[in-house]
Amino acid sequence: MQQTGKTPRARMGQRIALIMAGTGVFWVAATYIGQQYGWSNRTHALFDLAALAGFGFALWQTFQLWRTRQDDDKG
Image (cartoon, rainbow, N blue to C red; front, side):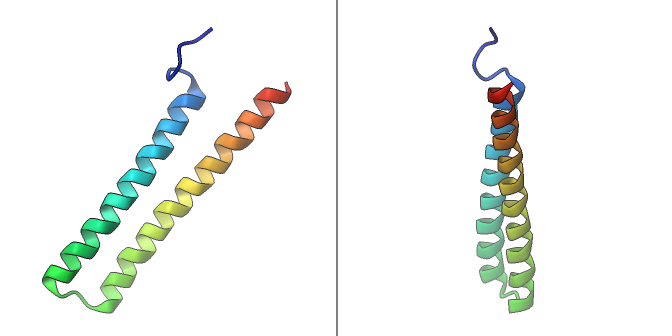
């Protein structure tokens, strides 16, 4: 039996958590910096779309992890 946190599924979950946290920090920082420097709404929208893509990617990875877990439990 492998230790907790060392399995491929655990590492994948940790990677997903880092993607979500990193995207959130990026989004907050970009919003703050944009307000300080007076960026246009188009620039804000660009960073919002980048954050949306990051969160969407994390959601996709979470779905893949869930599917992997379902397949492992059946077999």
